[in-house]
Amino acid sequence: MKLRYRVPTLLAPLRIAALLLAVSLLSACQETRFEVLPSGDVSDCDASWVGSWRVENTGEADDEDDGPMYWVVAENCAQYQTLEPGGESDGEEDFSIRYVRHGGDAYLALNEPEAKQDDSAFDKASMLVRYEVRNKDEIRTFEIDNRLVARLIVDGEIIGQTEVKHAKPSNASKSLNSDSISNLIYGPSANTDIVIKRKGVFKRKPWMILRRASDEEIARIKTTIEERRPEDG
Image (cartoon, rainbow, N blue to C red; front, side):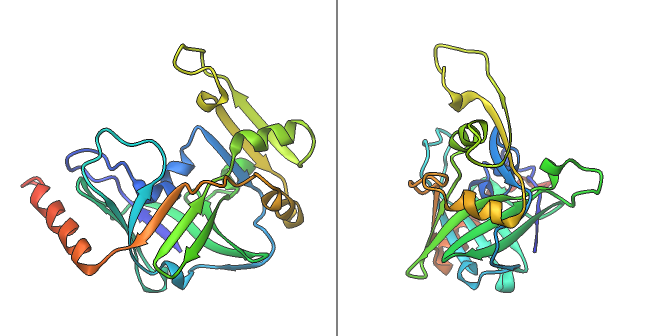
């Protein structure tokens, strides 16, 4: 399934909450990619995701936050859409989203727009986000600890390559948090399996929590979007 996404020209570019699952990850300063997906079942849809979700970012609060954001997944995952007070997503960039089941765990596999044959192995590789479905009305997502993976690669404990670009030190930040980290885990799938099962590779604290949204909530956010839409938009 391909996610079609356009940053709308409304009040301001979307902060993309739910699309952090795809877009922000793909442009992050710290990321880990896998040449080969884990062994197990791979599909274009997990029915657990179908419906409307209110997205809660468990990270730092956004000073410009003006209301909740929503992630809407159509039947059979045929279409994805984000909604927030500043606008809605609806086109142009393709992002591949697949659902992987491995060893009792579930993962989102995220890829850049159509990779070309002469693209680098890194550009063609997939990112993984682990998720848990709770009581059908809540989904918790967990991101990879990219700094830990970089150290494991350097120490020869997992097979791959890493590139760390150190940011200029400042009083505000002198840790790896501000560094650019690019990790690539080599195939085959057995190697991917080893990495994702290693303790600590996926952070314990949920990255984002999605809670089932009511039809009334979706109607309200759509009304807000229309009210804020420029007359020439």
